[in-house]
Image (cartoon, rainbow, N blue to C red; front, side, top):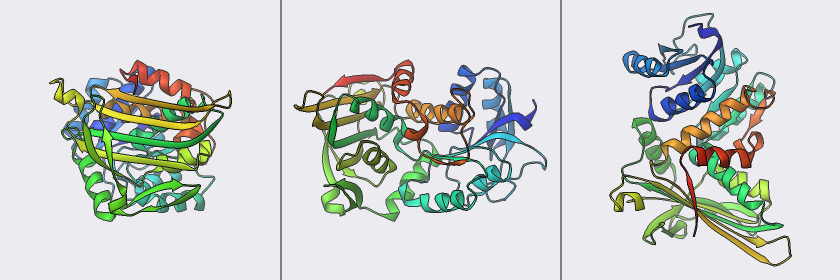
Length: 333
């Protein structure tokens, strides 16, 4: 396999990385993939299952990522936290599109700075949204029913047994250590929400109440600026999901509530649950794969250098179609 034309997936043997690779393989059977991880044996297993893929070891503490000199890649996908930004710099040095997943709102400043300092180097997709942006895109599709959106409230319930692999758990711990405050837009003003005020009650699909918290996440800024809604918040809770209570395994549920004015000029509200019976993993990997597909021009034109968020590059209607194809259901609340 010629690695020079491969998509390099950092953390490609993990949950998000391996599922992202599986989406890309299914959509584009001839696209070369390189599965990069610390454990070569594990990465090789993923590569063998995919077919047409190569496994390599990677060291994110090194500027060259520990990869052989002279290798070229069509994209670099960080499916785990690129804490030193070596993955981003490697992509910029090689003129390859870059996607990040795990920075979160609290860690994006270094990425933005690095992207702005070298604006012509490569396109950078910051996808540290919930499920790599697919919930924001679904919300924007629902918002098309409105003439004006006044309020967006999103509540995501993650099953206690669906927090992801070691990298996902480390992300949750890191974000929790930094702040217990939330971030929201209220009456048109972006601002922090104190820990006590940030606590909210979320309702599961079966009506069960779960205590959650408004969180600082990029979905808030993406949705507020894309719709103009003066009130936007995103709450998150970890608990037992409706799927687990039914004995069907951990599901993921995201309730999306929109309020505003419809085309007729009358008040309008939309309240829908986005549900996947297999948890958050299929949604996150789908969001990443859609971003890669778009960056490389495998669907639409290739993306010019710059800094992007998912809603800038992806069509909401197409994302909803792909969510349904991936087994997601939409249920009116």
